[in-house]
Image (cartoon, rainbow, N blue to C red):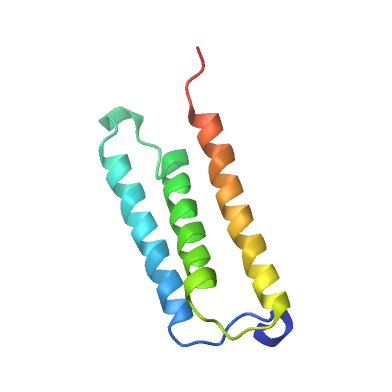
Length: 100
């Protein structure tokens, strides 16, 4: 699958992505901690936004600064993931903004 998608086999790449997901989950839990006791519903939309933003920005950082030696299809696949993650986060933010 790695070869087919053209994604990196780099040993530090995937643990770094896991770390950013854990940071996003930590931020999501911190946000949820601030909600009122009776209104908690798991990580919710704010948590999803935090996790997706962390994932999108860290992956974009890897693509820009990581010197990854992958074929063009790997870059294309990973940039599509960045766009999807940041696009989902943007859509979630638009849904979360209170309307007057």
